[in-house]
Structures are given as structure tokens and as C-alpha cells.
Length: 136
Image (cartoon, rainbow, N blue to C red; front, side):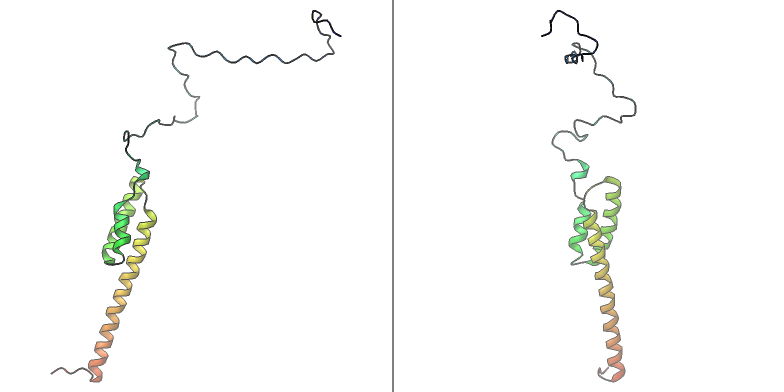
């Protein structure tokens, strides 16, 4: 057995030092500044105030209108969709997919309407030339 009062020999390993937690900061001292290059500190609260949704949590109303109106008035869907995309780019709101879907459906509706009008005109002109329609 070894004597606890005796110093350890040079060939014996020395035990690691005991862990001592760091001392708490003194009362009233300012918190330490972040290290250079660590970036800005995260905000604790949203800039809108308590109970207000963040801008990223809001849906763009024109994007919703664009999608809904694509089934009824295609021109309104195209106009609202383009305005909504512009607003979403500036504000960061949700609804980019809705605006794009409204634009696509609106353009498809416009192209379908144009094709319908052209077909009606061609059929009418063909009927007049054939004699199917009388003008008296």
C-alpha cells in the first residue's frame, strides 16, 4: 500500500485535477459581448409586437384571389397573379405557389377563350359561304 502522505513517484500517473465550475458573473455586471464575426444576435421578440404574426406567416391575399378567380375570370387571375408575385418578392409573404398556379390557370383560360372565339368565327364564316345561314 502506498502512504497518502508520501509524494507520488515520477513513474506513477498523476490523477487529473478536480473539475471546478466557473464563477458566476458579479451582480450588476454587463453580459459579455459576442465574439467578432459571430453574426447578429437573434431577436427575442418579433418587431411587430406581442401577438402579431411575422411577415413570413402571412398569406398574400392577391395570390389567393388569383387562384380563385382563375376558374371564373381568367384576365383577373393573370393580373392579380403578377401583382401578387411582385408583392411576395418584396415582403416575403407566403403564397408564391398560389400566385403561380393562378397565373398558369389564367393563361390557360385566356388561350382557351381565344381558341373558342377563333373556332366560332371560322364556323360562322364557313356556314355563310356554304349557304347554311341565310341573310334575309
